[in-house]
Amino acid sequence: MSFTIWFTGLSGSGKTTLSRLLFRELKCRSLKAELLDGDIIRTNFSQELGFTKKDRDINVRRIGFVSYLLAKNDVISVVAAIAPYRETREQNRKLIDSYVEVHCNCPLETAERRDVKGLYARARAGEIPNFTGISDPYEEPVAPEIVVNTDKESVSESLGKILCYLEEKGFVPMAHECQMIPFTEDDEFQWKNDLARLGFARAVGPGRSK
Image (cartoon, rainbow, N blue to C red; front, side):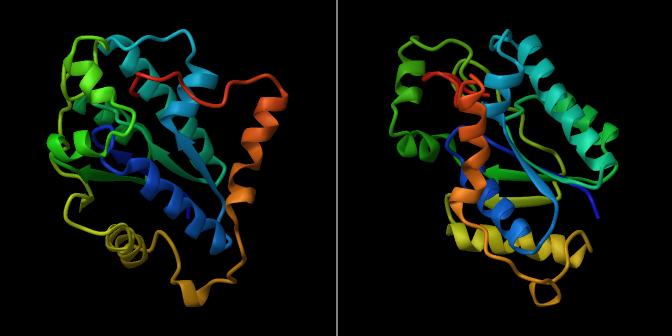
């Protein structure tokens, strides 16, 4: 069964970590899945966009449309993108039949403490405009399918909560029902090397958020 699971939350809330772990678990269960990281999509698909509300909305809708196309071909989309505006997230929900929203709920102060690159500090100093949570709003989901409180839960607890929901709702089979296959980080990121060889950028530049 194809579906889109979208991780939304502040920068530093755990979206990337959880989405990669979930993607790896789905691949280990022999399921067809793609990982759509907001930074990578922006770099290779939305290079011309800035960080105004209009540009952010366009980027989020583009990711939603890619997810829609993947779903039509029975591929699961695992999306990690801030997607700060509620209305645009709801547009994607209407577009995609099987849509699961995961709110990585994390207080701003915790996200700031996790920020080893110092982006929040730079944003507070006015060096980075339109930074979500500081100079640009983040509109929390009203009724997400899953809420993970990443300031209180361990990574394994949050991942377990997500997998439990997907199993209970019939989105994914139980692990014991699958032919489990090894899936390593080398397998996961091989396509990044392929992109690099073709001249595509690997990641967004420092100081930006999706």
